[in-house]
Length: 105
Image (cartoon, rainbow, N blue to C red; front, side):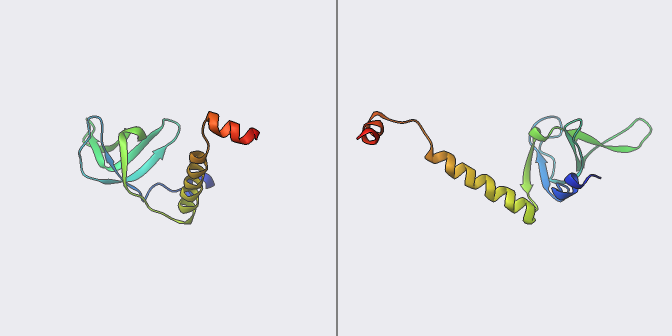
């Protein structure tokens, strides 16, 4: 497994399916992430094949809600950085006529 996948490990996160055929089932942990297909596999979401084997069903990440997020130091840094950028974005905005006049004086 590449270092980038291991650094931001989503496998201890618990998620719940909110849309699609498997919605409303109990909460399960992420078992596998298939980035090429943009699909995640969840512990509780399985189906039975014709030969009797059970396999995990791939679910698109947009159809899932994270219920419990495992926060390590890398995740915390990312969340803090995103929160800081949101605060900076709120200060920006369109200029009103009054502010332009004050700036020109």
